[in-house]
Length: 173
Image (cartoon, rainbow, N blue to C red):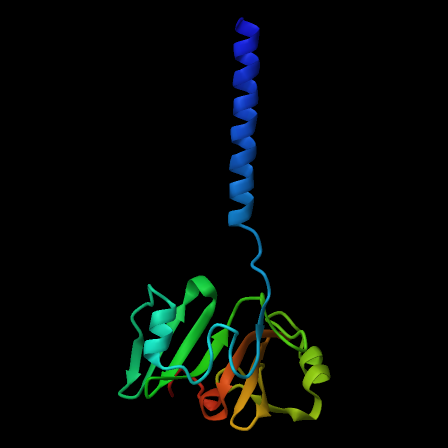
């Protein structure tokens, strides 16, 4: 009888351990890649109103008001930053490696990969604060584009939005 109880306890403990490991592993699993374009993501689109974005994210953090018509919202849990001008989403900055363009460029890509993907379309400028950094901006369609911030010879940030908003250096400035 004692043997049966200990065998049952062992199996129950083993099952609990497996369930715990499964839950723990899924919590740390890499997110699926999210396609980004000059228009944002399938979920977050450039041109959305602040009210539309607020309805999309139920616990939207309080925006950092930088001027009367411009504000930023840091969504650290999603590894992105939203920039609104006149309550319209004008730019999204992506910091996570799981955000990827249709040409397979993401945080961590080399500047050579960006150049190979976007060629002569990329306008290259020295970063205003980091003399070793580069900003590679590509106008994709009309008034929209992508910007790749290169630091330490890798893509450190990818931004999507209006060409005007992509030109802003420090948030709303």
